[in-house]
Amino acid sequence: MDRTRMALDKARKQRARGRPVFFVQSVPTTNVNPAPISYHSTRVIEVLPDVLRANRIVATQDGDETANIYRILRSQVLKKMSDSGWSTLAVCSANQGEGKTLTAINLAISLAIDVNQTVLLVDLDLRDPDVAEKFGITPEFGLDDFLRGRVDLAQCLVNPGIERLVLLPMRAPMDKSSEVLGSPAMARLAHELKNRYPDRIVVYDMPPVLLTDDCLAFMPNVDAALFVVAEGESAKSDVERSLALLKDSHVIGTVLNKSLEKKISTPS
Image 1 (cartoon, rainbow, N blue to C red):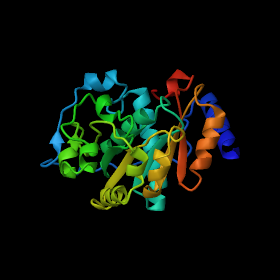
Image 2 (tube, helix red, strand yellow):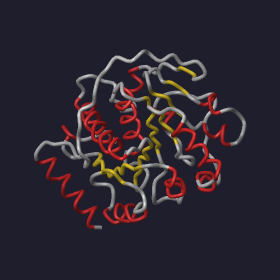
Image 3 (cartoon, rainbow, N blue to C red):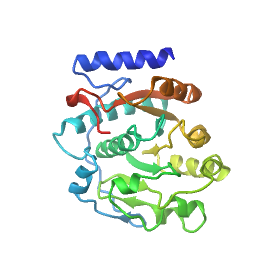
């Protein structure tokens, strides 16, 4: 409870000073010119910029004020994860509609634009998947098909036309999602995704913490978590309860979403 109150108080003070509202230390990234990536088994679907803008995916836009905030968040996340030797990150919220999916997407894009790593964005909200829809794509196969043994994992991967970013979307919701997420098969998949490429960061768009036990069932498989709070919508008791449930996870920071201060708010 004290940690939650301190985080929210700090957010309000930072907004008053015109500062972003992310609570881990910032460090600049290093820009180099790596060789371009050619995708062979991964399906490439060029997503139109107008589709991204319509769905509030702004991280690709140069000079956009909100995109710059996501770049600040990227630097903070990279610093914390690098210091701890971590490479997998869960983006969580207490309930639906608080901005976790758009935070996960925009953060993943910002991480991919930084040329020091590749990024895999995984839709793990098995009951209510939304990542593919936000990108405006209809995947031929999804994580649900792989988990049902219908296809190989490579057949589910999609590059949305953003270099160094690959999506592992869901094609359709799944029943018994908490049992699936807590299964040995899912633990093996998480291990495979984490260890296949040494320069990869895996970002998981997680189910809401309080609606089911889905999120908690999978959390032992990730290194760290980022918690999204919607200002004016997330109940304090829900935030406190969620953080209590995540007490055994490494919650590296809190994102205050839907800020009333327009110039520093992130999209909902």
